Length: 403
Ligand SMILES: Cc1cc2nc3c(=O)[nH]c(=O)nc-3n(C[C@H](O)[C@H](O)[C@H](O)COP(=O)(O)OP(=O)(O)OC[C@H]3O[C@@H](n4cnc5c(N)ncnc54)[C@H](O)[C@@H]3O)c2cc1C
Figure 1 (cartoon, helix red, strand yellow):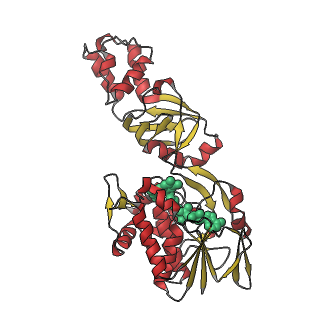
Figure 2 (cartoon, helix red, strand yellow):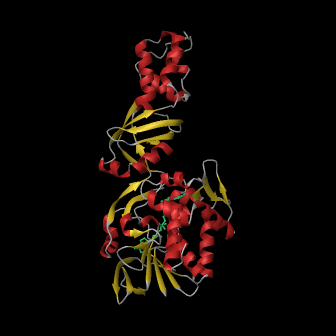
Figure 3 (spheres, helix red, strand yellow):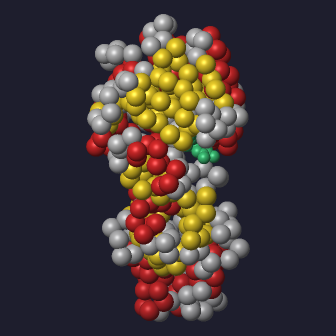
């Protein structure tokens, strides 16, 4: 049995190793277009590789996937994040969990993961062919005929497509020609650009438990919010960019957000402070845990005289402060990448894959794994988990192993 794997990334390697461990008589070949395999693993997590997330409740875990959560619930029942951690441990790589749940190799070095994968594929005799940029796949006499851009041709009995996500639909043409529907790709995981005067010189300030709404839509998220040189970042924004990937693309990344800067009872706190007849200067004494510099910017841009004390606050001033704290509006003018990390929303339609084996419902013996599928997660190790799990299930599916 000759098995071809298109794409030498996270999903492709994990699947190749799974196949080799299930059946040592198969001839497995990884086809990689560039000169280097596993290049995203290398740069991932700032060079540390955030391999997965330690969240234990699987129903909560899949809520971190704007697309594919239902399908992944079944995939994770066969190979979960806990299985991933165990898998690496059994192979000699110890992982550690950080406070926020992100899991990294104890070495803090993605090279540890790459070394392990390379060692295993070499031990199992998996062939790795670099510089093989697949641009056509057809079927003849029950064999997959795989051609690259240079005109080389290879033949396989079974084929796994694990070539990651692409930014433009034309790059998916050869998969479409095989009989698959491609959900048009749009970027996910990005930060918001904003030039509002209120944010001037505030880069680096972060606020915990902010709520962010995208006006005119139902998109809402809460969590930490970070002010950057160019606008907004942090978990609350990244989550919005992921769950709103398609809507925000349709809006051409121009929209208005409304921020509630705290989860405290703003109205009550402002009224109590005002009624207490406090002699404290408003500008120097932030309410609701707002960082001092951000608070100063709020007051200086609010129209309230900055020298006022709390006991001099008019009813109108109090309303102004309540509004700033609970519904500040900002015009977003575009997007930027987040630490160069991004994923593609879109890809091979979920409806056309049997998630028990990752086999195509349209073409027998054709399998998919990783970001090529219309699945993507938020930041925190969720994208690699999807790559390992779909890669594992595909590896078992290809070897006809029941799991
Ligand atoms: C900078 C960065 C940091 C990231 N950090 C993290 C992180 O810490 N944790 C996390 O969970 N996720 C992270 N991600 C997301 C994660 O890297 C991807 O979701 C994951 O790599 C997807 O795995 P994959 O195997 O499907 O695709 P990839 O890893 O992209 O691998 C696909 C491979 O296929 C090859 N290929 C493409 N087309 C062809 C073709 N036609 N013929 C042959 N080969 C082809 C590509 O060159 C590539 O090597 C990060 C992403 C980026 C960009």
